[in-house]
Image 1 (tube, helix red, strand yellow):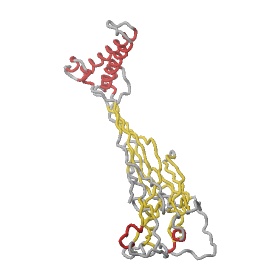
Image 2: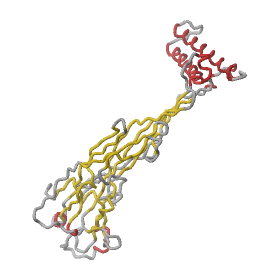
Image 3: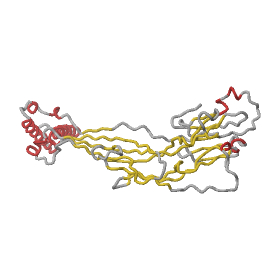
Image 4: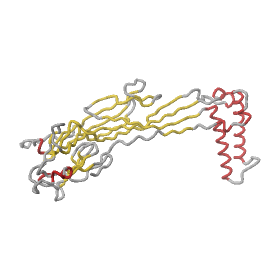
Length: 368
């Protein structure tokens, strides 16, 4: 058996029970039968599901937290800085929203191909969770939500004490430390200005050394300025919401988002609502009545004719994401004649693991 994550696995019915089949006659004349799966009743065989289409809503969010500096109360007095950070504040923003459809087993549409004597045994492709993807050929890899990336954090914070002079560190109180730190900032600016004008007592020998000296002065100034102005920390975080549509819906609350708390549960009124609309476009063709009796359960492999469905995610002020995609649960279950498998055992069929739709059907002559 070949098995891959989120892909397909092959099941050859007549190799699963080799010990039994070795005793069978060479000629095979009976048909492959497919039955509705009934736990405890259905005979031994291979059970498969048709999928229903779920959606993974991925939300990328950014948090910016601003922290006040230790000398915030002296920023105006010593450096003439206005509107500096006075207390810790957090601001969340919703940067991006995307929608990815994928298939999950529909437990109301589970069928079994029993292992019977004198039965042509097709090669079935199943996903890891049992969704039918192929008959007598390779199935399509099944898309699945990816693992969430770890939060990414960046900060502007510097260790300001590393840039304080001995006089600043041994000052008797915070006011004096702020005054001496401001004086050091002014000295740094004067030194940088002298270097830029070529008037410093010890001018560097070349441009690279000049740049290095100016960069060091900039770093010193920034570290000391943070004591007055404050500093920030940024974090990018990704979340996923799994939603399985079962019916059309308008303005259903999917989640809530707060500027202060970020993504919160849909029942948490601290956040503004994020809504979802599910609209069935009703694109499946009407069933054709050709006068023939409908095939019985024992005569067909099942697949889905999906309907196009519009998914819209939005807030009060804007649309966050919108797609139109086929969904199996809004479609119709159809049958694939067992004659295709029994009379032409080289017939190949592939199915969409997201919608259950028939993608391709070919016979031994090359196409149908």
